[in-house]
Length: 341
Image (tube, rainbow, N blue to C red):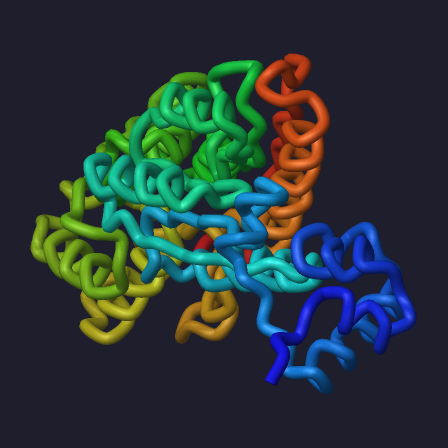
C-alpha cells in the first residue's frame, strides 16, 4: 500500500500542496472553509504528517508551552482555558507545566521547551526569567510574560496593575473608617503579591492614624485563611485588626468562614474582609465577599493573541525584532459586597 502524501490530500481537498502544508503549521493563513475541506480530506485518507520531518523543512512546531506558577490557584484554570481556546483556534497545541513556585523548576521547564523547539512560550514567572527568554528568542522561540509586567522593553508582557489593586482595597477599608488593617498572604517575595502589599501601604501611608500589619500564612488557600482567622480570634479584642486585606479570595473565604462559624468575630461589624481576584465563589460565600476583580479570561486571551503576534514578528524579522515590544496592562476594579461595606 502506497503511503498517503500531502499531494494526495491536496488533490482530494481541491487545494494546493502549499495550502495543506499551511493547514498543519500556519493554519491562520487559511479560511475556515479551506481548513474544513483539508480536514475532511485528511480524515478520509488517514493522512498522518511526519512532525519531525516537517519541522526540519519548515522550522515550525505546532506546539506552545505554558508555565504556571500555581496550577492549583483558583484563577489559573480560567486563564489556561482562555489560552487553550485561542491556541486551538489557530490549529496549534498547548503543553502546560506547573513550576510549583520553584525558580529551579521554572528554568528546567524553559530548558525543556527550548530543547523541544516549541514555537512560543507563555510564562507566569516566579523569578526573573527575562534573560533566559531573550536567549530563547535568539534561536527563534517567541515568548510573553503573563501576569507580570516585563522589565526589559524587548520582552512582551500582559499584566495586571496589582499596585493599583492593593491601593483600591486598602483605600476602601480606610474610607469605611478602619484603622488597623492586616495584610494576609504567603510568598511575600513574589512580585505580584509584593505589588498588592505596596499598593496597600501607599494608601495607608497617606492616611494619618492608619496602620498595616503583615500577617504571613504558609499558603494562599482556604485552609490557611481558616487558621489565620482562628489565630486572630484568639487575640484580645483590642489587639485584633479591624480589617483584613487578603492577597487572594481563597484566603478571604477561609477567614470569613472561620469567623462566622465560630461566632467569635462579626463580619464586617468587628472585622471587615477584602479579597482579591473575584473568583466565582466570592459572591456566594456565607457573607458575600468584597474583592478586587481582575480579568482572568481577558488576560488569557490577550496573552495568547500577543504570543501569536510575537511568533509572526520573530518569523519575519528573526532576532532583530524592533523594540519596544508590547506591554499590555489591565486595571483591576473594586467590587463591594457584604464583607466590607
